[in-house]
Image (cartoon, rainbow, N blue to C red; front, side, top):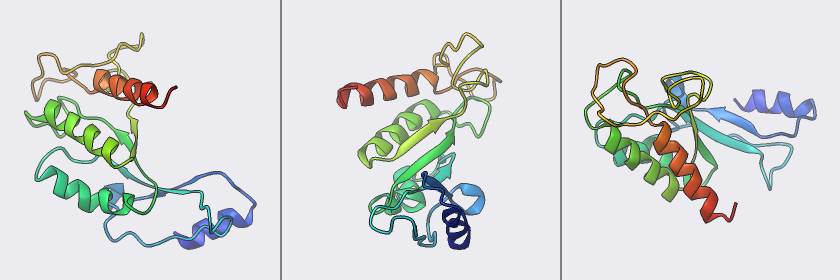
Length: 162
């Protein structure tokens, strides 16, 4: 990863670079330290993981997979969804809220998957947010975190005065 960052920066690219996590982007545990040669005192790097799980010992796994690194480096969750038909468990609605609370408390960003793909965070092409109303696992397209994410971002915007 360091060679890639060095190569990109050698082309005078100054924008933020996203450093993907390990094990198919699911963890930042034991991620190598990457230096930003364009700005060692103010690096333009953010570390990213995909799809934090909503099963197991949640906060312990989140801490290991990205929370520990977030204490010293910018971290974000990319491409997150928690629906009724993908890696579902009956506790998804409650665990999704716990994840958002954890991310907020640790100043970790999140990107929902996907505003342009119906039945994920939006129900349809009118971009109506999905909800967890009458949530049941295994029922295709029956529940997603759209409304939860919209409220999360609205609270964050209000708190920052935006």
